[in-house]
Image (cartoon, helix red, strand yellow):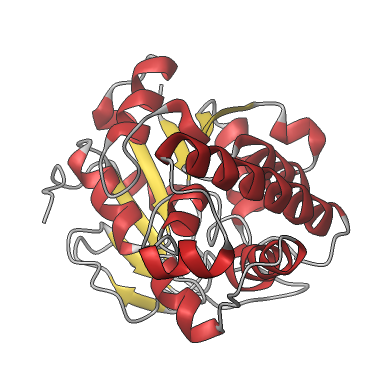
Length: 264
């Protein structure tokens, strides 16, 4: 059975800039931490997989001293976990408000895949409550219930390590040759390729300039047909999928016949 596996942030919705970044900054403010990430700062932070891991990049000796944080590693980990739980609460409330729309085409393609008998999944290093909130918003509750969800700390190593995708494929009982991943970042693509999976990339707010060598198809968006058309711009099409104004399930199915991926 073919399987379509989506990343979450940047793929299902443009959540990094409009959801995660404000949630991080509000958390820092609530905890009285001497930091606020700018959009430019966060463009670098998104290269770090996992929310707690991004927060831990703050923990220089100088920052720990300035913020009055504990120096004991276990106590510091517990403090970061507190921050992250609050940040997740803020973020899921934002998603539930409906202020961040789904990206064009993700629900359409998922519905087509489900109708054709494909398995569906989301594989993300974000916290599971955050992932489920975005999935429900983007797909609607009925279609979202058809997805397997692999998220958060279900694996120790985050992207670009292949662990989350290897875990997903194993638990879905899928054959790697029949799995297509939709990602938006180089780290995510590298994780998919290292797991032996083909990968389509839909670039997002912070990833348009990244190197996607190795992807089977790179587009600006999956796109949408009339009555509210959103054109997909093809950025790289190494195997000649030649999608039209919007990417279809047939285009993605074609990519499963392309040569096996090679991790860069």
